[in-house]
Length: 211
Image (tube, rainbow, N blue to C red):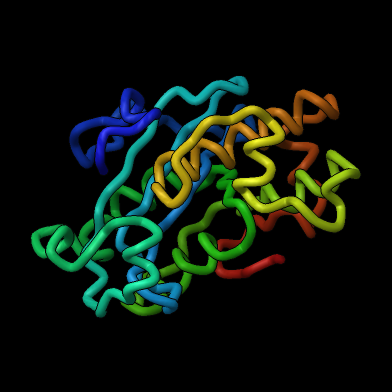
């Protein structure tokens, strides 16, 4: 990843040492970028850890998707085939990723990132990661009535929340999604556990997709 607003949180290595299980004391925010329209073509993935409403740690990796890059996707995120030529493929990062995600609440903004991770797992015949997925777009729509029907895209919500970020970078998108969720919890006086009670917001089964 190029130097960005949240780079200070990102470990330089691929280890997730020091990331103990969160339970319902916090959550992880995840975002991916893909090489093309195939959700499994992940070329960048990021995980940001939130504790007590604060982002305390992040991890990211460029990924070789083993698939062609579409011009539109490259224009959005700036990652191309040359940049991933020597990057690990998804099976090479899954142990680290699964160690972080397993047993935790994992937030994504709208279903695409969750679907991408699950599609990549299926693509390489890897067992689903057992975590509790949560959709921050659904949270925002319920927390703030003004976004119930429209305007709940990541960029729009981030602007309304006063979050400055660079869109289509996995670390910054994950950070923005996490900050939106923390603001929704603060504004409504609810917790991670409360939001997870609603099955249409989250799922505890890593093999299922709940929109």
